Length: 319
Image 1 (tube, helix red, strand yellow):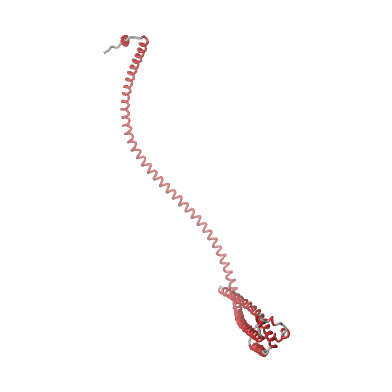
Image 2: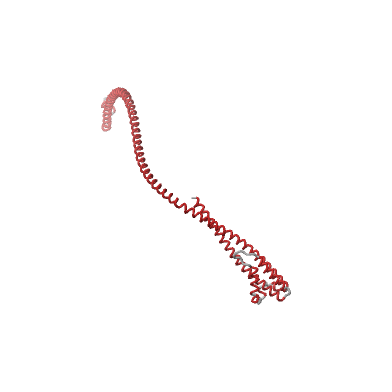
């Protein structure tokens, strides 16, 4: 809601302003601490000036400087929590002059300055007091600026607080409307839940019908595929049958020719068989003759027959 965004922006701005205020307060504390240190140092310097004023003719000049500082203090305006440093120096010097007069000069002057003449030491202390006065004046100016910033930030914080209160009132006025919107939103959510339940049920039914339709489509596709395969198989078998019939006719003619060829080959083989049998018989007779010749040769060797007797025995006539 716009009021919520504005409240967030206001809260962030307030936090930033508070952080800046804390930072300025810290700087203010540091400045006050530094101011106290400078007060102490200025007090030491002024006491040194008073010591020299007692012993030198320049003492009225020192008194005039102190009076000038007092006049400056009375004419310088200060903000809240601001310390009047020059006035404090003068008053503090007047109240504790008797106690501070007792301090040795070595605690105020550095070691090289103790070797100078009284007039030179007096001028050194005056110059140092002037520098401290300028430093204190500068710090007072900075502190005044810090106080101005702090006042401006406080004013801004008050404005933001008023804005926050206004936004809180606006937020409170919108609370009833927000409650009504929440109630309406709850009723709408319940109605949406009911519609979601109904939608899920319808979705499940639709998925069931879709699965059944997909299953039927798959079965139909499978049946069509089987039908196509069966038709292709029938066509292939018809082609094979025609080819087998043609092949059977061709094979019957070929078988007839083969039978005729085998019959002729059989007859030829029968003739060859007869010729072989006759040749075998002749070979047997020749073998028998050769066997008898062998026997006769062996017998002739044994009986030492003459050639003529051998020829007679063989019944063989020379040509």
